[in-house]
Length: 50
Image (cartoon, rainbow, N blue to C red; front, side):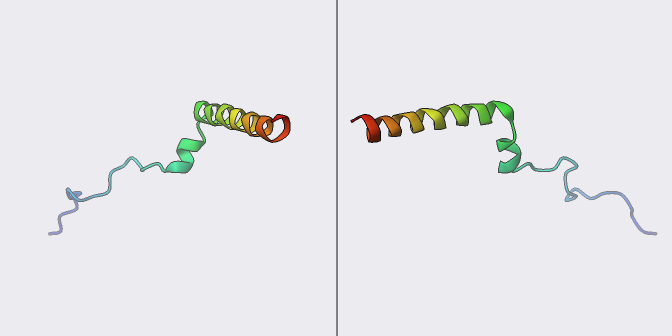
């Protein structure tokens, strides 16, 4: 008779989520956009006004 129960080494039912899932989160994207805009404004200030 075959044992059809799951073993302890079975894959977990919850999938691992990678970096693309983290980047799809709106608060992180807003934070990165704000930081990017600040860096862009600082670089344009240095290039054009100084």
